Length: 313
Image (cartoon, rainbow, N blue to C red; front, side):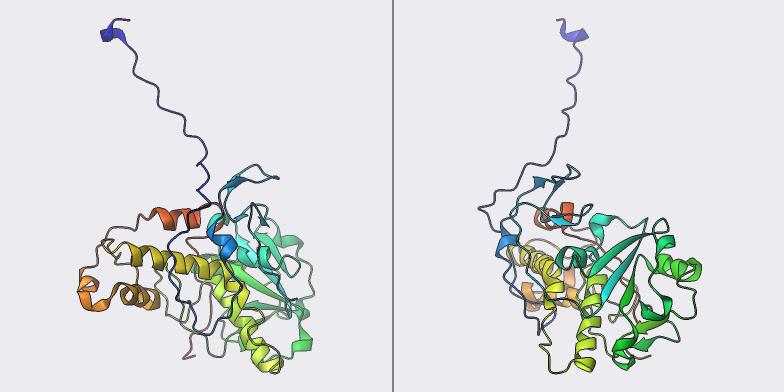
């Protein structure tokens, strides 16, 4: 063929991402997002390769964010029955693959239900007087001050602050005066790695679910094991350690200016704040292959902070 008339090479068709080598362990920090956590072994998380979901045929790692079922070689911890049912109301504009709230469905499938807003919440039928919603309204009451026999379900709103306000304002069930709002007495500072403009007491969704159970146990079951449900943060902690480990291993990687708050302080600590690097934060976004792999197809890299009450209110 005449070179002048030769057609340009066709662009290669992008196929599915090949499975990661399961023999390679990701860099992991040893830090915990919250100091007193007692978690199950994460060995099975370290060697998960992407596999095809047997149901929806998507290629996923860790678990399928659509089917919410563990896949591949993942062995999640066996958790005790939650003291109440979590009903996650996920806004339809929130990506499933970015929601930490869905961790609870994978880890506690019998005690967590997921409803998409607005299409599925219209059929929500739990009695209003037996339902709490985690939301920082002026009438919200700390979980420790609510009679534990008076409710069976807690609705967790999964969306941006704007979406959360919209859902509470517009959803007929949430406007029912018999639906009580619940909050925290003393939330910890979030260790979430995504930037937010709220205070450090505004937790990532799975952090909020874990802490709600913690305050429930402290108030209503003080003789029980207070760490019994720490594995709600099993996936969350693994990603936290993986992101820190990536920065700890690659000393030349710059911090993004959006990594603030407690997580930003943790980054500075593992890198060594005395080397002056913390004064040279770069504005470019993080482009970490390890972080991206940890987030893709199951593990959630980005989540909207759940609405919670400030500690000073």
